[in-house]
Length: 365
Image 1: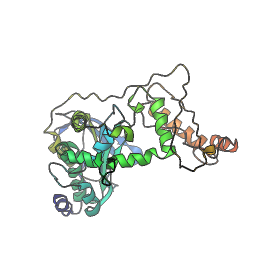
Image 2: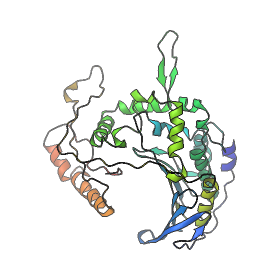
Image 3: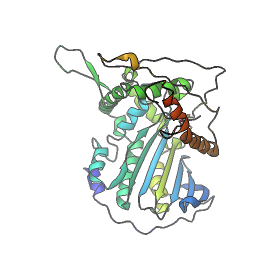
Image 4: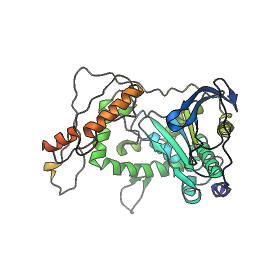
């Protein structure tokens, strides 16, 4: 396959070549907006803006790190629990314009020198990271991923959505049709886990007036409402360089990073993308929510109840220092079996165990 041919061309990495960038400098279609010494990491970090599309690239030159990493992140706020962001994350890795094979992701797992290769759907964004210690292999991975997210085969082949999202299936003659699909089946498993369902229900009801009020992973009851037209439209809206943030970290030549990205981005024009995450207004009084979860037919339900009390701590995202302070406080109170709040809850005998784990960050609030 094309992917196997690309992976097979791996060679040793050349010596590090720095950019010596300065604010305002232009290079390969990018303009440098910020240069900062990262003293703790003993390296330099630069923030670049793509002149044509407005895309951002965080480029960290780390000559001490041979494990080169790359990622692209798109802000993908869902409008419902039909799982569009999750299904699209799976689908873009099912072949692209340059690599028209069925599952290049699987081919890379088997045939590349990758040290990390994955994709993740969060409640408000979708991430595509790769890593490799071999320079040519690293470039191959970046090339496959960039072509996948920007030019996926899935937009022209409804069978990809059917495979990764949902489709009807006949298991036995004269039996009712059933729903199947990679994401559909995955989320059925997630929704059968009480702890997972508790966490999702909590987030949905704690920030109900934001994209966090729905499930980006997909509710099996709603995934089957996802249509091919909506699928294509979501990609067109959010998988655009103007809505993308790229990053590089490692000892690969920094100037080549910008050149490689521009080879893909130059085909696009700047676009206004509405993907901002609105803030949840704080409530004047507490709210109470109840939900149910599945148990086995013959299970004793006398000890199957769960309770959770949660707060939104601010009206907007806290600054870095406050976030760090909250993380430390969270660890001190709940981070170990002997932590005072966790121990107090356990010793109180209110339940058989403590669920959850204190603070939750990575959201808009």
